[in-house]
Length: 60
Image (tube, rainbow, N blue to C red; front, side, top):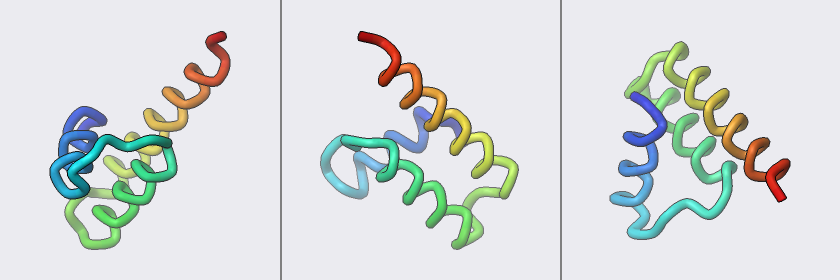
């Protein structure tokens, strides 16, 4: 699973777009706990989500 798939899954389950990184991290964690994604995928998603958030904060 990549970040785009996670975003689509979030939007389809919540009926709105994620507003911050915590919402996406929570969904990724739930998917990992329910064995829908591997630890490797969870770790990669968490890294991607944190990288995007850092870039958004540092860009004026």
